[in-house]
Amino acid sequence: MTTIDINALALVLAQAAGAEIRPRFRALAKSDIRTKADANDLVTEADEAAERFIKKEVAAQFPGVLFVGEESVAADPALLPKLADAELAIVVDPIDGTFNFASGVPLFGVMAAIVSGGETVGGIIYDPMGDDFVMAEKGGGAWQTGDHRPAVKLKTRGAAPLDAMTGMASTSFLDRERRARILSNLAKVAFVSNYRCAAHEYRTFAGGHLHYLMYNKLMPWDHLAGTLIAQEAGAYAARFDGSPYQPHHVEGGLLVAPDKDSWEMLRREVFVD
Image 1: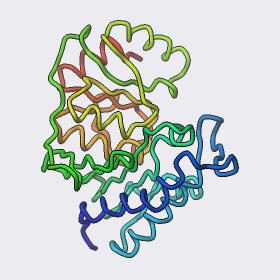
Image 2: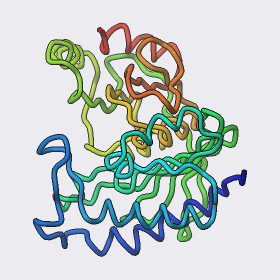
Image 3: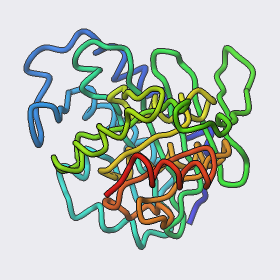
Image 4: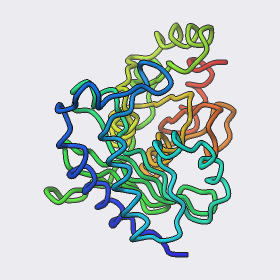
């Protein structure tokens, strides 16, 4: 089985964005945008074309690797469970932040994670508008890089008192009662928001600008790359029950913080059951 050259994979993401995503930005016809689960869950021609581009290049450059893409799984849900037992896999979100993309908001990203033996070992978040990457390989730290600037090693923000914490929380997929409790508890922190784009939320966190991230729905293309990048930048990440987040998990929530003490304080004071 071949190994994955993370820089080669990053180049594929950038090429897909150049060929299929940027040319369609603010140029989509109404017929190019469709709904999936509900009116806020969108897919566009750009998502599907970019995933086809990436899938074709992955097959050519890394033969035998399991390809798990968001749109591929939408077409064939039986593909997702294969990730748990795959020797080597590439997990792709062709456009993270599709709602923003379809709305003409320049806040979206292309993400890929490398999974080996049930463990995330590589992560890439590409910003098509800024034309740069945030990347990590397990044990190698997290970096922001691009042809037009020198590579910068990323470090997460240090711990802070609860009332000084700033962060991002996605409460959309919580049940109504728990969402109400958590939204009330968020008055205890200094700032909460979300970009409707995990790619840029993870980039912002890993760059040292936030103290926490919280998600409830866990799809691998949304969170594998970003969680590894955050951890390699120094963060502590775990599911709500304290267990490690693994590639096959789709439930159990996820909380990311500067360290374990901060994680436990946020879990106890804000993100309660």
